Every structure is written in structure tokens, then in C-alpha cells.
Length: 425
Image 1: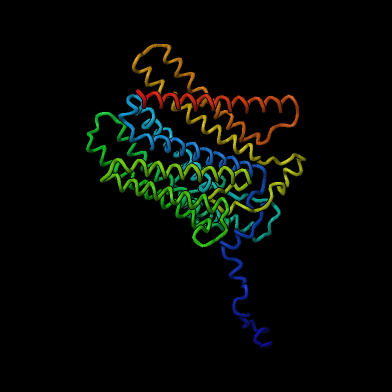
Image 2: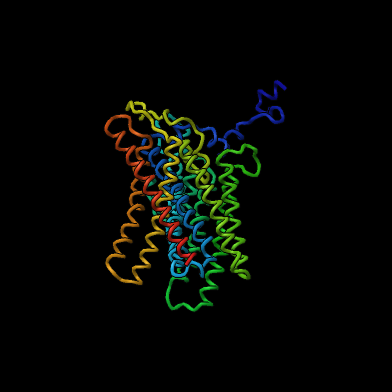
């Protein structure tokens, strides 16, 4: 045995960790720390901001789909408010879901780990191989730092992910969701366009929703694979959120199947799926609060260490801010306010189309102001995660939060009054 070892013929004990096993991409990615995935402040801010808006738009869009789906079977009771509460709500939800899934694609297509300067030469060579791996790719992509806007650059995304030791699942998840939203949007466009025959609208709606529901279920399945939902008993936020997305996608798919022969039950299934998506996206906001910027579609970015290990931040002497539980709750309140305010605006705008006077247009403008204020507060919250300590900024920020809560309560009560009066009439 000694001679065999000297001659390089030793194979070790069965089950022993080998060099080949340690250098597999999935193991290399899992063992790299915070400094590898966030080598500088710019990369940290970019990934943090993108994940924030992905979670926020996902949650707010789910609110629209939940409300509109459950209202869809109340056409006779709602009367003139049917379209503002259903079709307009679906349009708003589609816009938010398109923005959400598009940002997911941008995050994967333009994924970069940069160069922290503290890695080994081998790691630096691996990173540079993302740009130099293919002579054909070099002629197409001369600059590895180019920011791409086209979401279907699958070659670029997979090559960059592979160069960082990450599998292609994050990009597959993002592009599947994005394509699914486009399928749903196709059916909505057919319903909105004037002059389209009813039977054509029905066919396009049914088949586009069927494709979209299948892709959403497939996207949830890939998230479950990343979060080991089917193989692990560690039921954290990511585990539950991935499972929720998969169940919500299945509800969308089965609702589309049921729509072929039962148009009454399918909106209820879509409403249940949207409600599950809303709970799942709420968990993703909590994950963002816990500095898990990969959410559930880019799991490798989660649990990689503490953000205060970022050298540039420590050098600046700044306190690294993290989201508080009250801050996460405030984000939920802003999203709810934005959705309710949009519904109120749609209702008042419909009334203006009926009466066509200046006063009704003024009321509609007043109803959309809480939505604008809510999204301005969401933008402020993404930059200022904790309440400032110095006066008078602390008092100003506290006053803004109180005002936001009051505006949200007013918008919710206004929406409830519109719906209840419409059903009673």
C-alpha cells in the first residue's frame, strides 16, 4: 500500500471526500462567503435594490390579482364597478408582475461577482473565464461588464452563472415566470382590444391562461428545487415561500383547465392561487429584511455571511443598516395603500366617463394621490431602512409613517364603501 501511495495509485477510503467532489460547481458556490458574492459596495447595493423591488412588486401585484379574481363572479352585483374592480385590477397586476419578473431576468442575465481582490488566483481565473470561455462569445460580447436589457440572452446568463459556480436554475426560474406573465398578458390584450369577436377572445383567453398557468407552476417547481422543498425538512421562510409559489402556480394552471368547461369556478381558483402568492411574496419581504437578497429564485445569494463583513463599508465607518420588523410591516402597508388607491381611482375615473364633469375628474385625481405617496415612501424605505436617530429627521420620518398609515386606512375604507354600496344597490 505504501508503494501504491508513492506511485499515485491510492484511492482513499470509500465515502472519503475527494478533490474532484470539492471542486464541483455546486459545492464551490455553496462554500464561498459574503466577500465573494458581494465584493464591493456597488454589487451589494445593486443586488439589495433589485431583490427589494422584486419582492415589493410581487406582493402588490398579488393583491390586485386576489381582489380582482374574487370579484370576477360578482358582475351583476357590482354593475358599473365590475370593470374597474376586475379588468383594471388585472391590468395593474400584470404591469407589476411584468416588472417583477423582468427584474428577475435582469438580475440573472447581468449577474456578476466582480473581483474582490481577496480571492485566490484560481478564483480570479475562474471569474475571468466568464468573459474568455468562448471565442465566439467574445466576438458577440466584447465587454463582460455590459449591462443587458434583453431578458432572453440565455447564453450570456448561463455562461455568467456557470463562471461563478452557479447552476442555470436561477435564470430558468426567472425566464419561465417572465414568459408566463407574457402569456397571461396576451389573453388580457385580446379581452381589452375593441372589435375582437367574442369566440376569438374566449379561445385566446383560455389557451393563453393555460400556458401561463403551466409556466407559473413550472417556475414554482424550480424554486422548490433550489430551496430543497421536496428533499429537506428545514422549513424556513424560503422553504415555505417556494412551496407557496408552486401551489399558487398549480391553482393558476388548474383554474385555466377548469375555465374550458366551468367559467364560474376558475376565477375562484385564481383567487386562491393569488392569495397564496400574496402570502409567499410577504415571506420574501421578510427574507429581504433578513438580508437574504437571493429571495427564493437565487438561493445561492442567501446565508452567505453578515453584511458588516463588507470591507468598504467598514472602512467608511458607517453603521450597516438592516430592515426592522416594523419596517417590513410598513412595506406591506404601503403596498396595500397603493392597490386600494388604484382601485378607487379606477372607480372614480369610470364615474367621470359617465358624467364627464370636472368635479369627478378632480375626485379621481385625489384618489390616486395616496398611491403616488405610497410608492414614494417605498422608494424612501429602500434607501432609509431604519428610522434616523438624529433630530429633526427622526421626527419627520415618524410623522411620514403615521401619515402613511392614516392614508392607507382612508383608502381601504373608501374602497370598502364603494364595494358595499354597489352590492347593496
